[in-house]
Image (tube, rainbow, N blue to C red; front, side):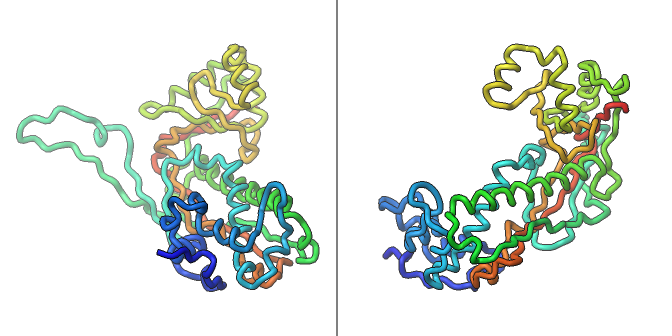
Length: 339
């Protein structure tokens, strides 16, 4: 098959195909498989279009924003460039993969999840006598719908104010927008972990033994609440993180070396420790990330492509639609430090 990346006709309608992203449309018209063994191997369809119009988005010789608008075809690539930069910012500071067990792509605004009660006779693997009934586990549809929320930011800038800005500098601002969107989504997920998703499944709340004090005994008692699950992830507010770091158990030299070398911590109980400002003060949320939370993805990062292609950056929305559902209520608990 002949290479077609340099002859494709690009148009706004590529953003409108239901169920497909702009890059997926490009890949269908210009499959990457046909470039194996060539100098273009390793580039996806969008990156080949950047090469076609000689647009350098980073590194030495990086182009200015106006390079996208030299031709009408190249202008069609600008919304996808923005979406990718925002998505990169979301991925760089995204804690959601660390707290979700599954991701469901869903085309709609109201979603109904499933649930099964853990523990008790429904989950016991008992010996079955000949002719006796085999114990069953019932998976039920949740009674209430999960509502998906649109989260995003408005890009407010005139074309004149950014046209001469280098793309790598412009990307920094876009990645920050992505980071802010990721924080909004994390706040939604944490709210569901603590308060439930509307199906009477709020997390159990436990408190420390003493006022304004967090001890290793408190952590061990909290850890013990997770049977038959395991506490493999611990989200903490910044003030609780400070209290944890001051515990004698965190004076272990190996823990200190790991923190100094990578900035990451593992608690003495083996959980992945994550600090986030979306939690209220004096709050920690422990969970078994394998069973606690489901992410429902209503849409990927969306941009108002028509405005961007026509250089109308004054108020161009960058949004994503998603929601969260609790899978097993007992797989997450809350620890509060007494006031």
